[in-house]
Length: 391
Image (cartoon, rainbow, N blue to C red):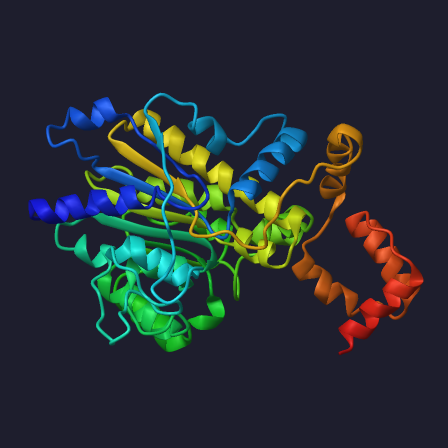
């Protein structure tokens, strides 16, 4: 591996520290410097997709309410040896990036158009980071709560004209031999694709029990849902999901167990459902998923204590939905009184859409919203929801 490419790896990791969400880099710089070249040999790159600075604040306050402690993400900013930074994440064709252009900017070091994956407007395919790291024998992993072929993991492990070309992305992962692939997306992998992964030496698993039992010395493809993994708020309130679907922290721990004893590895860990909740203006859904993401960060920090030559990057690609805490009431003292409404929510807005289909009249809508979301509405608004549901 040439010196310039080694610098590229560090630059890619450092660039990931700059995003609109005021991310943090935490590493023991003295330990890294003691290697002689000053370059960490292990990189864990955390991405909370769609997370604005205000979303971090909301999640931190909410975490104190339900866990009695704030986010370790926030604590990292006060840790000796940690660095903070911001970066302009605009894509090549918009002041607002999408996830594929953002991840590609880390994965190839180039701005591209929204919707593409490490591909320039003229069709030139750029070499993604995980391809660069194949020849020097770095172990590589992708862990996400979205479909494994979704935009953010794809930006590190593939190159294609469209983020929607999931077959091409899946083929790229397999060809590169990415060691750990954990997320959702069963419906995107047909029998032929799964058979090809099997021929390339992958273990193929679909449940959290199977994750616990894998051979850590063999590559793994874990697909734990038909599409994206369920949002954390839904996982917490449905025992059937808890029996089959691992949380992000559990997947991260297993990935580090598989990669962590090698001299060099890079692991991307994405909390992707925060983005989806923020797009839907689902504050409880976003906060619970962000806290689950924070649990995964703690797994990395615990690993770093035993392996001080580890660079940890925590960042976001963009902010979605504009969530914020408003000052309410005299001297803004009413704001904390409203936060328990988030704690009382028992489901995501995503699940709400499906559940509303079961309501036959306005009274049932009112009862459902009060029981599941601590929201009280009049009959007229309940009727409007039924009209919207029915198109």
